[in-house]
Length: 457
Image (tube, rainbow, N blue to C red):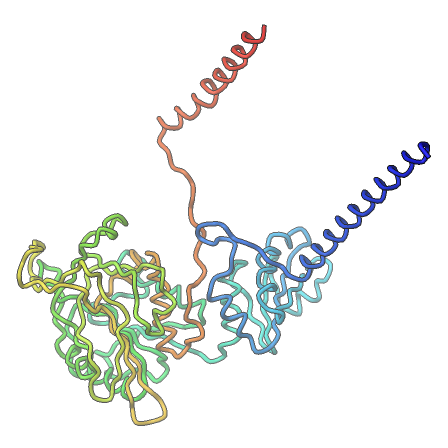
């Protein structure tokens, strides 16, 4: 009997080991099956660097038919794009990703008109669009061009001191123009002084900060265009009268907008919000952190936008126009009517206390099947090259064009460029880091080791 006890314990121990092994194997097998079937990742970076943007998710999940993303490259180059393309595939079962080795299958590359390694082509139905580059912005842009088959042209008015889309300087709108391209928009300029008629090819018209008065034929042309179902964005700066840099009142244009229920006021907003000061903005830049429910700005919640040299708007629906406010200045803002001097007193009793409406959008009932649309923003510098990169400004700019062009499905938060997180230090700081790492830290380790040895001897 005693001789059987060790054998019994060994059998029981072996049974326990076998049971635990089976349980562990089963858990690992189930985990592998779930991991293969459900691909879930978590992006803990502050700017969501390894996640696709809201715009991409919205476009891909709303696809009506299957799409194929094909990467034409060498076998050694597929790994560079795989992580990004897998994210697209994980968004929707309608996305299929394919890899073509152009060295082994040159006939496929030739048939797709591929000229270089690393070319990515997005195919939806019978449409094939090449991504401008192997980034999210480039690939999503190809999706948009596949989906939006019609030509859409955004026309920028010139001739009265407006911001120019060919100007790459601080006040230019070249960055704004570049932001429109991924959404499939073409751009052109129109001069209403030479011909007082908005071309029929214009999907939307942009009046960007004129510093001279529009003449009556120009205003009539814009009014006729919108009242016939056209779309227009008006960005009108405060009529400053300081030195040589004066901005005209543009009374004829203001009168037309007043007939649609939006009246730009002759004032300038000063924002005394301390949050703006922490962001390095002066009081002449109005910081907006909360928005109304209008479609253009609904996606901007949680994102700040900044507006240098802004004026307020008086908004009330009038005639055949239905207007909505988009956003206002902060409670700590005020508006001054003293526009001829850089010296402004905060305690001036003539100042108007905030919050003050800064942007509005309206629909114009034309009596026909089409509806005119317009957006009025009391500043134009916010979309210039020097400021359009500020936080949510670029999304606001393109979302506004999306709404005017009836592309509401594109309104979203777009891919952002990766943050530059390099640490910049001076030469003296670099010397201190080198001294500490090469001499101070090793000496401390040696001293600690000697002290331990001394105690133990």
